[in-house]
Amino acid sequence: MFNEAQISMTGYVATQPRWRGIGSASPNVTMRVAWTPRRLDKSTGEWADGHTSYVSVLCWRKLAENVATCLRKGDPVMVRGRLTVRDYTDKDGVARTAVEVDASSVGHDLGRGVAQFQRTRPATGQTADEFAAESSMPGGEFASTGDLGAGRAGDRAADAVPAGAGRPGSPDIFDEEAIGALAAQAGEVPVPF
Image 1 (cartoon, helix red, strand yellow):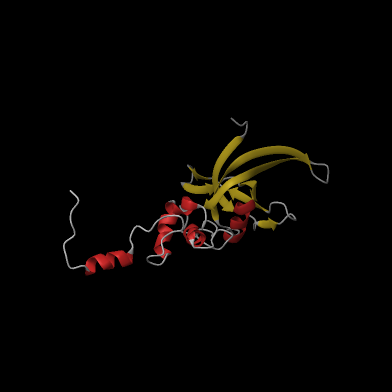
Image 2 (image 1 turned 90 degrees about the horizontal axis):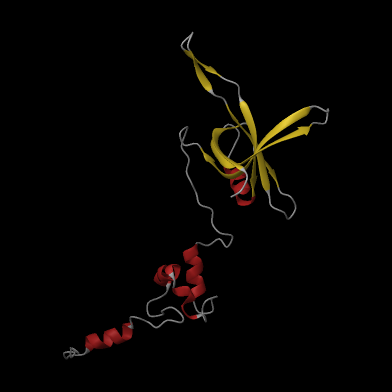
C-alpha cells in the first residue's frame, strides 16, 4: 500500500487552466480550484459565505489534454487525486505553504449543471471495431495469423466483410453457392439419423 493521501473534492475552476507542453515529455495543465463553504447565520437567518480556500491542481498526459479542451474558469468541477502539502520560501523570503492535488480524474459537477460526454477516439482515428475489420481483411495485420482477428471485435467486424468472403484463417460457415445449389435440387435430402 502506498503512503499517500487521496482526496476527492468539489469546487469551481478559479483560474483559467494553463497548458504546458514540455518538449517531448508529458504535457500538463495547472489550474486553481476553489470552494467557499456557506453557513446559516442563526442571528439573521440568512446564508453567509465562509472563507474561500484554494488548491493547485496538476493534470498530466491525456487528462491534461482533455481538461484543457473542456474546462474554463468558473466551471463547477469534481477532482480526485493525490494530495501534497509542502512548505517553500517565495522570492521575497516569506515562508509559504503550497497545497497541490496531482489529479487522477477531473469532471464537471453535474449537481450544478449539465454536460455532454464525448469519448475521444484512438490516435488512429478509428474505433476498435473499424481497426479490427481493417486488420482482418486480406493484406491486413492479422491476415496470416489464423484466429487472432476472430475475437469479440472480430465477430462484430465480420458484419463489414462481404458475404462469402469469410475471415482469413477461418473456414466459411455458410457457403452461399452451396446453399443455392442445394435449394435448386429437386429431391429430398436424406436425413442421417
